Length: 485
Ligand SMILES: Cc1cc2nc3c(=O)[nH]c(=O)nc-3n(C[C@H](O)[C@H](O)[C@H](O)COP(=O)(O)O)c2cc1C
Image: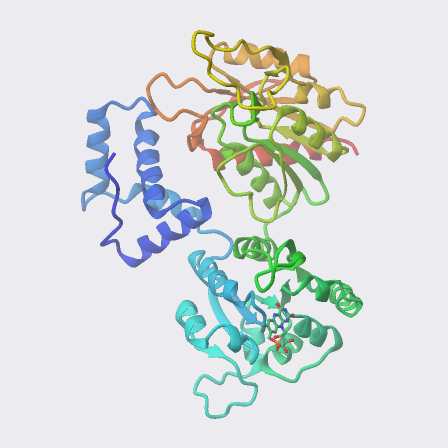
């Protein structure tokens, strides 16, 4: 297919496209492709004939027709749409990431007003922050000349949430001890809104007893925190805890704080597995499958949106970890089983991963050489552990066990057999055959599933994997509600 160039769209459509692309971790062109495909398949199914597809595209792009795909997706504007964030940028190296954070928030429809400390201006300019936020940047507590002087009280109250990123040791100390000697610290004391801090500092600073004390005090005062993470520090070759959370993780934390929807899964720990497993043959070759992790990751995110404490165990995938979700990365089926067992007990477990049924008996220590005249090597296969059945019959079995059945034939019969054999409460069955040349369920963005339980079989219409995830998360919340704890 030729590449798509996004040009001449009006601003609102372009912004929507940009935001959806960011939310889904795609380029704008890929997002446009997915939407066009969804619009076409929505009318004819993936087996749509080419003349029907052409007719639809003509209708969708003609000036008279309503913009069907845009209307359909505009409902995903999200929690941040119309929200007002006051972002306080502190004086640390990570201030450069705060600029990206402004972009990410605006992509999601939030208005961002920026306060910068004097130290922050040593690292990034008010010009950049102003250009990205499309607003004046506030720096001075006393500035009667400033035509934008709206005062620290209004600044702090005219926001839905205050975010400090990076939160320096100094800003944490000031707020923990009630200091108010510049605009940033005064705004933080004057606010009646929640405060989220994203600390960033050298690991030795973060470990210092004074910083630990302030962190603990701020937590008791109701300040929310995201990060810091472990990793390499920007300014030195040091590695440790103190790295600021990534902008998308901060966005997820902001969304969680501003999300006023009910949280029926609050206090529930749920394990989700996702992606394929790779079973090594030798150091460079492995046996894999086509699972992309999109469905499992979407389910993890949907459960977290309902308040669950989600632990995601992911096989090797090419997509990002869902923001704000504790993710364990594994490679093989055996590693996945060990990770899941270590996470028990849990309230529920959802096994979405496409775990390899077999692995080679032993992986060669060196790359297997192709020898002239010797033919291909015979691979001796052994069975992998059955993670779903193991947990379904485990002494620490979660209250609710959900398995996925990817089948190419006898979908429901195989799913029903799996339900009984594996000790699962629900099986989400999907047909992973794709004879018509479409991308198919594995790797694609859409899914059509049947929910198989002792009560019978419920068929869901074809929808996006995000929609399947949202609906399944609601079903899990419903099922857990009826389980007596
Ligand atoms: C190069 C450099 C990097 C710094 N990085 C950090 C940092 O990552 N975190 C931190 O807490 N302080 C850091 N500091 C120290 C702060 O800039 C200093 O404590 C300052 O007073 C903080 O002011 P503010 O909290 O008003 O922004 C750094 C200082 C320098 C010179």
